[in-house]
Length: 128
Image 1 (tube, one colour):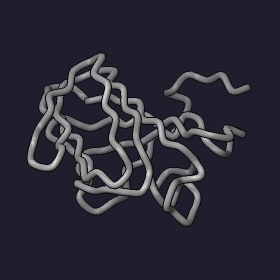
Image 2 (cartoon, rainbow, N blue to C red; image 1 turned 135 degrees about the vertical axis):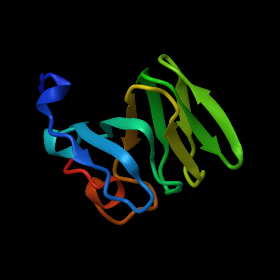
Image 3 (cartoon, one colour; image 1 turned 45 degrees about the horizontal axis):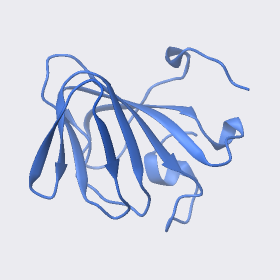
Image 4 (tube, rainbow, N blue to C red; image 1 turned 30 degrees about the vertical axis):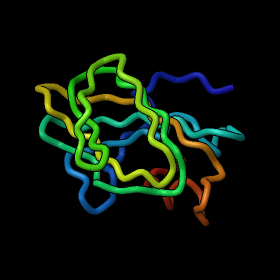
């Protein structure tokens, strides 16, 4: 069992082209013995955004704090605390902070990553 406060997990910059003002914390993952999912916390600074990208695995996202949008093709969907987003495999997407405070989101992904040939770091640039 792992029990920690999320701030005990080091935040790392999202190291992908197109990411601006994004930090990631891999809260639970394979290194913790989790057999099925990785739980990550993203913090996007005001005016920041994730890269516009797609990949071969799904995301389940829950917005904790802040305001923003998620881009689906050319449609922007508003986000606020309590918003839930499902991004299917292969769907291009981008999360943007449109508010005055960091946009904080939990993001869960399955592992092994579908259609990927490496551990989580190859897909999300984290250590978990």
